[in-house]
Image (cartoon, rainbow, N blue to C red; front, side, top):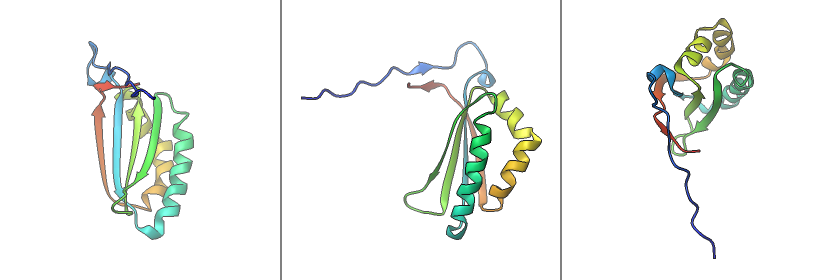
Amino acid sequence: MSSAPTSAPAQDTTGPGSASDVPLRVIFMVTVPEDRTERFLAAYDGISRRVAEVDGHVEDQVAQSTTDPTRWVITSLWETAAAFEVWERSTEHRTLVAPMRECFTDPVSLRFAVRRQTR
């Protein structure tokens, strides 16, 4: 007989600081025509290897819609909004994302201060 898994308690990230002092979840939604999928993924691979080394970066993922294969989302988690903003403003960031930008249309970028998370 197996027991139901227990979930970890939610970790409160609010603390006494402002939204810029808590982890930041960045969500980037794009449309990638099917004939550009491989180029898009190759460009993502190049960026993700480099961004993994950036101070303040925690993790990232790329995901494809199960209902519309042209819809994609890239999510990343950062220690703070400031860490992400330093990376986003860098020349290296603009250079690295250029090949990926050639593959997509309709970009939507969203940022969320993480208030609770489970581990």
